Amino acid sequence: MPDTRAQDFGSRLRRSREDRGVSLRQIADVTKLSVRALDGLERGQVKCLPNGIFRRALVRAYASEVGLNPEATLSEFLAIYPDDLPALVSTPCGRQLLADDVAPSRAAQIGQLALKVLGAAVPAGAGILYIVLTTNAPAPAHLLLENEPLQTVDAWRPEIVPAGGFMEPPPPAPPALALFVTITSPCELRVQVDGRETVARRFAAGEQFQLEAREEVILTGDDAGAVQFSINGQAGRMLGEPGAPLGARIVRDDYDAFLIGH
Image (cartoon, rainbow, N blue to C red; front, side, top):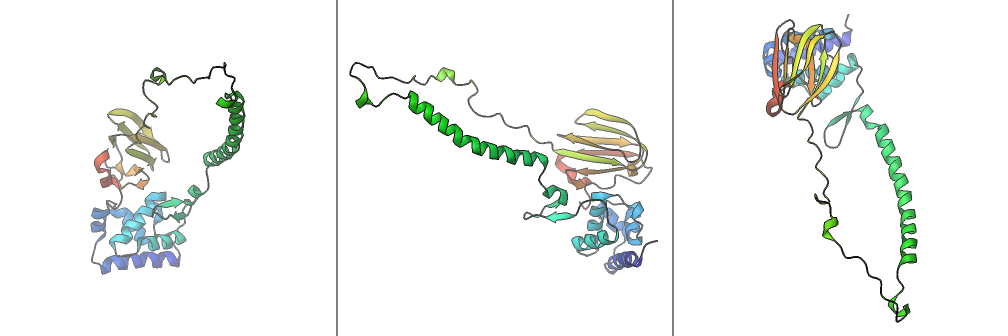
């Protein structure tokens, strides 16, 4: 049973919605969320809500539609229904990171160590190079014997320049669509990425997978309500009611239409 805080929280959400004269169906049409999920939020039935970033996006979207501060509402919600995601950390540019992202990764630590080693090696290498150059360098002209020819340096020869020049090849373009998919109940699912079928099998509840696409992703299956996803780190909307056929085509130029709140 929900505690008093949960009951008060849900009641305030409902009153805010009723004060604005909007129905759950109207909010669902705007946010692309299901009426069932929105009703569950008001009633404190969080088990019917998606987990993680999907749940957070749902709370923010609902709060925006009923005139509440999305971040304050989410903070209050998480105080009552904490999830297993790390706390959010604000950054100067306004993007929100997970707290785990703030700690330097092992790769970053290795990179820092390499820079320190390089910083120590460069002065030493410069000193060795100076000794070699000064040892092998020709003496000043006034110290040469009259019959000793001057040493000349080989002229620069253009034929030794690499055919492609010295420019580094451009890095590969990042994927336009990065999807993280979570299956919430058993279902058949077929996935096509840029015209090539990459997944076609029956999934069990709790399975997850990631995929990247340049142009489009097509999802087809037998249970639209069983597929949750995020696109480029942003929570995706519900693709249909539980048990309804799934058919969704997500393309690079308008994938925002598949995000919660868009």
